[in-house]
Image (cartoon, rainbow, N blue to C red; front, side, top):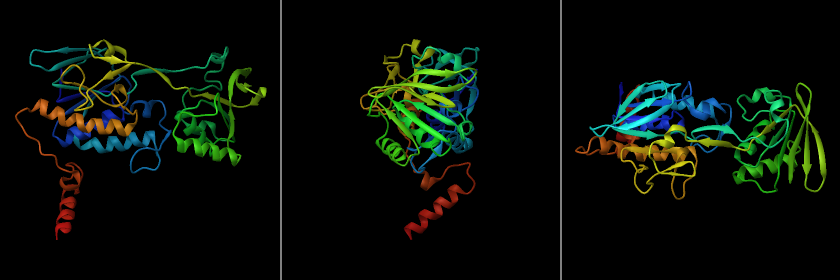
Length: 351
């Protein structure tokens, strides 16, 4: 049996950052993830996708963010159970939890932090009759490696952040990029909408709104898409790839049977205090949780992880009082010279 202070279910960015925040409190952590490597969706689905809302990084690839987080938590030596899904949970007499995976691996901890992102998921497919025929032959629902599309003709469909972000990114990679959306308005970040509009004016993006892709053409590989336009009627667009980005259909999986309060496929938490669920000792942070005003952003997950760890410390050590210290003053043990240099900085500032 694996014993730890905080058992983290989900090794995506929020789960990984929880290791760092717990490490500052001298708490041991262990992570469970069904994927074979840490990083969650950022590593498995879109490692080459640019992310623009991480503080201090105007742009960072999802895979690089994961690499940076792994480097950041290295001093705290977390444990990992990868390629296994958290299946059941049991409250023991000593007020700790026993979590067993689908492969029978048992984990014991006084605190469980669910950081499972959107849970298990599958892409939402558009209702095009022969779309399965072209999957992996011109149709892709996820962009793992943008280099596949270098100097190719690409049609993207969708109106959210993923469609906008990839349109902007591939405009500098593909020979031709078209973005098809059924409305004139987009659901993504306003800055991204403005950038796509500007690229359209410059002739770098073929923006087609009030339209939907209704037909796929080709023999062994996709060669063209048929588009139904609201006012212009039928349009045929020659292309090498069609990428419908309509989001993912999430499922909580076994976690949904743990007796937690669920709302719209997310776990309800107390955001007024510490992101604890209706079961004391079980927390939910990141995209997997919900509360009034929730924003499904990576940076929101980072914030929730920091607050949660403070509460977890008090639960594990109810008789101890922790005085929060800033890393700029105390440094982080494990990084050579960090503490020493940080203290010198403070002394100079005082002088």
